[in-house]
Length: 165
Image (tube, rainbow, N blue to C red; front, side, top):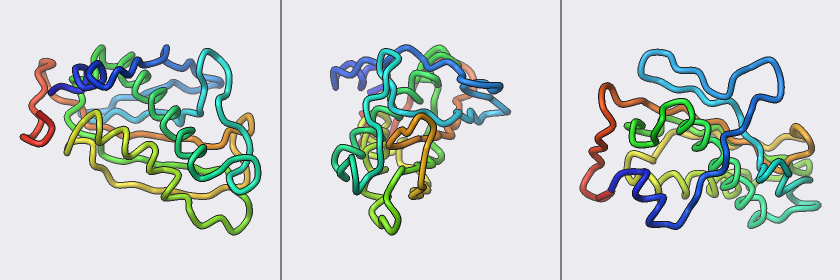
């Protein structure tokens, strides 16, 4: 099943693509790679999750924050390409987790992003990943997610592996 059809089947609607908050662009394509700027957990112009994991946020709520970030990143990809069906695979995810000193569960938080990508893209959603705890993020967001995807050459037909059909 194509990523666009999979989103519909999961009853997931993408938000409006985020706009740049500074002197950068939301996504840059070079060759068959699309680099997305980091996205924070915004819905309708408001942060959904603020504060540090281990203080204001739990691992579970921070994982949901990473999921919201990823939906925003997917919206940026769709805006750049016209369709998520033009993505042949997710190459990598970089996840930043606003956490208290000594927090060691950043990978569990970033699973919120990874799990969503596999749900939408199947095996093509499996990716390399970095999950890093930091002492602060823009606007005191709980998480920030950055994606790198490979873009299919030519048309929009999506050919996932058998497990993604």
